[in-house]
Image (tube, rainbow, N blue to C red; front, top):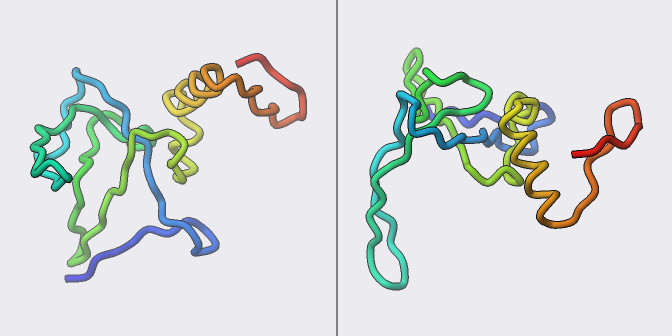
Length: 117
């Protein structure tokens, strides 16, 4: 079995998807424990979905034809590198809220006009 790391075009960055928390979603991340300076912290998993894959897609690694395909995902919108997720309404709304709270002007529209967030 081989593990496949999905790289973006150009081969310089790993594809990190945007995980959208949604208690009504049918998919849940696996429970796990993480070691901290205070000892292990147990996390129960979170319901949600990957923005570019739809609400029914699994968020855990998948096996396809003897290959393990990880689904690297984060809920930190600024760390997302997946072009599909970055086109989603969920990612755009999250980034607009981040920019608003930080006092950063909105990104220019593709035609060069400034739009309000």
